[in-house]
Every structure is written in C-alpha cells, then in structure tokens.
Length: 150
Length: 382
Image (cartoon, rainbow over all chains, first blue to last red; front, side, top):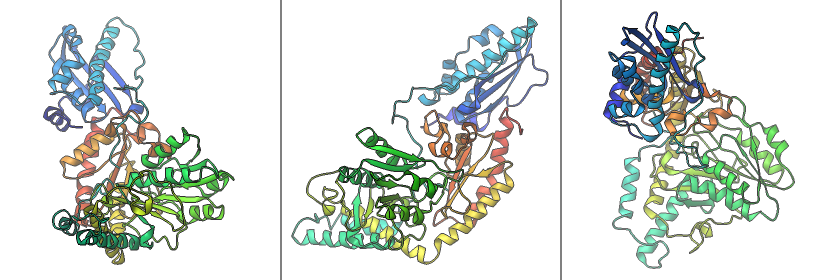
C-alpha cells in the first residue's frame, strides 16, 4: 500500500485540527471499533461556512481526508458544501489506495452530519445520536484479506 | 525496530552464497565433481542448522520457507496418521501458516480443536490435557508469538503430548537463533525455522523432524530431502541458511540474547513511563528477548507506524488499517483486547545491530508522536 504525496503531506501537517468553541453544528461519524472516528465542527455565518475544524481518531488516510475536506468546504455555502463528494476529496488528495476509499466517504459524511446538525439546531430540534457501523471496501472472502508482515 | 518481520542478510551470509550461484553451480544429485561439491556444501549447511538446535543433520529437512515447513509438519503428520485418528489441536494465536493449514484439514475430514490463550497469550497446560482424546494425533503450538512476543511453556506442553503419545510440532520461526533452544532437552517432535528471521536469505526454511517420525510429503518427485521435499535443492539458499545458523549459534554463545533482553527492557520501561496509559501486550516474563509490544489507547496503529517511519523508526502494528482487512489481528483479539484497543497496537523488535542509542532515539520520538495524534483525536482520557 502506498499513499500519494498529498496524503502524506496532509497527514503529517494537517490543517484545521481541533475544536471550535460554541460551534453552530457538530457531526461525528465512524466507530472506534472500526478504527476511525471523525468529528467535524462548523461555524456558520450568513449561510456560509466561516470556520471548520476536525478531530479524528484513525489511520493516515482518515486524518488526511478529514483535513482535506475541511479545507475544501471552508468559505463555501451550505449547499456547495453538501455537494462535496468523497470522490472530490480523494481526487484532491491525488487518489487513495482502494482499501482506504472508505476514509473519504467518512469525510463526506462528517461534513454532511455537521450540516444536518446545524439545520436541526436552526429548526430547534434535538441532536440525533451519532456513530455507525464499520465500512468495508470488500466483503472479505475467506483468506482474501491481505496481512501485515509477520 | 521491525526485526520480527524480517532481518537484513548478513554480508558474510551473502559472501558464502555467491560462489554457489557462480562457480559451484552443480546439482547435488549429480555424481560428477561439480555435483559432489554441491552435495558436500548441502551436508555442511545441514550440520550448521542442526547444531543450532541440537539436532542430528538427518533430522533437518530444508523447505522453501517457514510457511512450507509448517504445512509439511501439519498436513504431512495428520495425513500420515489419518488411520490412527483424525483429531488435531492447535492454539488461537498461531501464525496463519499453521491456523490455515488446520482450517483446511478441518474441511477435509479432520476435527480441529483450537485452544484459547490467557491475557498474556499463554496456552494453559491444563487445557491441553483436557483437549487430548484417544484419536488425537497431532498438537501444534508455536514456540513464541510474532505479535506479542509470548514464549509458551513448550517443555510442559510437549511433555504432555509425549506422555499421551501425541506428536508435538512447534513453529519456532521467531525463537530459533534468538534464544537458546535445544531439541535434546525439549519434548518437541517437529520444529519450524526460517532463515530470513536470523539474517539469512528469504525463501528458505527448515523443518526439524525427530528421527523415526513418518510424514507424508507435500511435494512428490525425485525424493530429495529424505523423500520429504522433492525438487532440486536450492544450494545457494541452503548454504546461506547454514552460515546464518552458524552465526546465530555463535551470537547466542556470546550472550547476544541477554544483551537484547536488556535493551528490550529499557525500551519497555521507557515507553511505559513516557506514554500515558500505555501497556505491554503479551507476557513480561515469558517473552522473546528482542520483542517489545504495546497497546497505546486512543491512537490508531497505522498512523503511529507512519509517523515513526518519518522519524526514521521502522515499527509495525496489528491494527486493521495496517493490513487492509476490517478486523484487527486475531492474536490481539484472542488475548482479550477489545477492537478499539487492538487498533492501537505497536510492535518494536530489536536486532543484533540495535544499540542503546537506537532505543533512546525511539524513546525520544515516540512520546511526541503519540501526543500529536492524541491531540488530534476526539477521544480524551476517560
């Protein structure tokens, strides 16, 4: 497995890391059992994402996609941000190894979840539970999974 | 710091091998001078590998690596004794070469019992006693585990098998050449070794088969390797393994394993005291001398390994993300680690050229890496 230079760059020097005080929307996706959890914080002014931060527990690809997606949606309107797909994130990173594509999906869903949380707050509704089941890039057939060097 | 995965080929080993690619290219099965030369090099290497573990040269079967040796031992013994019984026993933390061979036999007319391990990764002798039945023919339990470093009570486990008349195989790939190991004083019937774990070449291993034991070969043909592994011998690799084994024996006689154990303990103590909430996986006392493995809660293993790589440290992890599969390693789950902790596993394994400065370098770069990754994580200390 090899990461692109961009992935390595965003993993080693991620931007927009951390929490936002008093965020307007928060989304948390993933599951610690699967090894990646992404939490996105949004500050929204006049329908635009004025600031965005992330906190991620996960592999290099999970951290890089988190960082990249926050950079991509910053300054965008809500509708524009909702149009950012996992494919866009993966492309902006110069591609992802097949087994890491789910990380970019997590990034797309993280932004979506944070925006949905913002919209719910706007409507005065209570937040929904977060977290989910594990992703799999392929249903492992017996003996098909690759293994770490012993 | 990743010597469990593989080791560099020692220059002296390369030097010993080269003439057998160039000048001495004879087939050891030929009767002429070139053949005899190759034959005597094979004999010498067999002796070198045998004396590393206190075996007779005739008890050493060269194979294409550790996985093949495991397969030969397990399938070969199970098949040869299939009329006597079809129940075979192994443990939950074996290498896949063993586990998958058992799984395959389980689908082809054999009954498999997989023994659990405790939190340190140890197989209980009592469990083994309770699992052996009149139709049990073979037990395979690894000498030492590659992921958590735990060394099994092989003497006791093998002793139980001997008492009950059951063949006992052990995968010694991690242990051989790295800790004193003598089949004259151990009740072991078959033992697997791999050259590339002891500064020898890849693609060559050996199975020790105690005299008198009958196996069915995996590869039929010209009857090489006492009929147990047909095919023209790979003389250069065999010669390289021989040299690697001789040098390993020499290092052990000078106490290299004790030197490594001291460095290992310095590393373990250093990590435990500088990384909050970290703990050792496997046993502290029954442990490979060169092996340190940890669980670092709230950090994902692949992220750690990659950041360590950029700091000049080669490490490994049993997290799902390092393997491309969905689940963390079966070994970590078998010792009772929940998934979320198994993702934070870290293995550092030392070698003959590892110095105290190398260990101290790890201790200086690891804590800030962990801190950075934890600062990035939504999980805070409970």
